[in-house]
Image 1 (cartoon, helix red, strand yellow):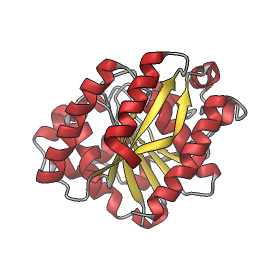
Image 2: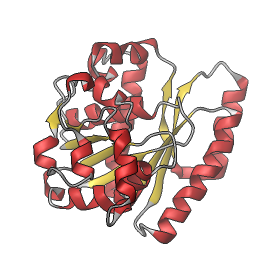
Image 3: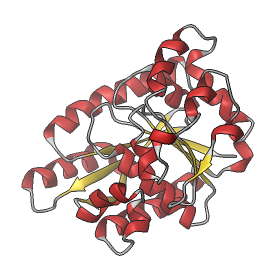
Amino acid sequence: MAKIFCVANQKGGVGKTTTCVNLAAALQESGQRTLLIDLDPQGNATMGSGVDKRTLKGGIYPLLVGLAQLDAVRMRSPSGGYDILPANRELAGAEVELVGLERRERRLRDALQAFDAEYDFVLVDCPPSLSLLTLNGLCAAHGVIIPMQCEYFALEGLSDLVNTIKKVHAGLNRDLKIIGLLRVMYDPRMTLQQQVSAQLESHFGDKVFRAIVPRNVRLAEAPSHGMPGVVFDRNAKGAQAYMAFAEEMIERVKKL
């Protein structure tokens, strides 16, 4: 049975897509059958996986509106080796169309059920807003991975996200829980980041992943080559951090 995880944060620019793409590649390399779902109309996870969104025919949009089955729209990432449900700007139109459809918050969940046995991990890259697309991700998921920077405003955004997850848990998906917080773009030289990191550990305890992803130029360069950072330069500190994070995720899932 596949374990489905949303990578979500209502704040933009916190490394959600970088985390999704690199975790998917690291899990696949560790022998886990992995599917990455790009739920963001910007299609950054699609491009970062080596799939050109500009020439994309289909993708996740027809799946959500009931025009296609999963096996007709999924692709194999040429650089990461995992399966991907790609996205492009067409997905923005699904927001409007979903409003009038039955089970509008559960379209993704329903589409994945028939393929549950084919994957060990399903990762969902959510847009940085609480939209119907994000709700579809949260309703399909067993848990949420929250990537966040160790900065003051990130703490404010975190409380909003935790409240959103509680509401979805209460009203739409009783299986949903916070799996953990991943510290990203971390610079240990900055006192504020050390302080916020310590605050997270004291408040959330073992919900904070041991793995910490540092600021890393090679991770930032990788998407322009259409490759996950763990493939682009596996010896970079950022890539090694995501490999360690993947191993931690595999261990954590065994305890769920």
